[in-house]
Length: 333
View (cartoon, rainbow, N blue to C red):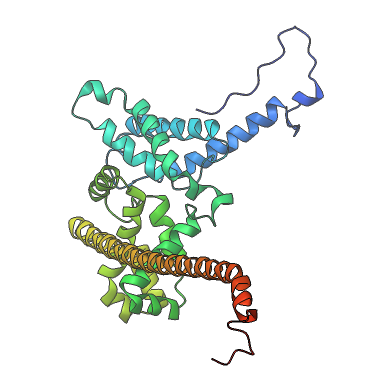
């Protein structure tokens, strides 16, 4: 359904204000909002009709196809209107299509009847976690799309530096393939059944976005032999049309890499804590030695002052003795 144009005047007067002219571009014009909404809906429709065209659920009878596509269009349009800072970005249709398929094919008719509302709710919750990759102003942040792609390169360098160097030597920028991997949660790289299996693992994980990064690295590592033999065009074709892969093997590989990194990180932190503890103990020993030395010096000063005071008090008596006729200088015995 297309957005409706603004209603005609209701006062019976056949006059139209300038701001309500169909060609007006004023910020408050209802017609300007209408054309903007129409443009947004057309953009969504172009992508929705290309969602999973190989799945009978989406390309069944014309009537079913129209109903399901309209449901996806409404979900994406409402989300874009409610979130103007994000709006609609190509790739969101893949996310909505996968979610809608799961809910609309539920074995319980009562659940299936609310597939559209459930899809909208879950899609909004999913976007709350990953919306940064769709916001252009956040591209260079750690959670933005460039930051996420950079993290993939860093992890690949840690686990397979030879493969990373090979890709860099052939000027194969990770954004050529990883951008679509991240924004669609790999739904374009695998068939629908494998995508749902991957999403089960991602959504069940407490750090789903981190696991997604490791899955992307594992996808590269599992194809390392072919990638090391290939040039730019061959490798780009492999990564933009990823070969059929055992999803469980992919999950096991990504999980093992993350577990290894967590273990080595914990060991480094433990070693650092031990080193910090040893440094703190050494600093404490030095401080204690300084304190003992300071106390010794203070005691020595007090002793010296006491001796000086005693000497000062004894000096008149010594003078008396030295000047007396018994011990005087003229005494010879």
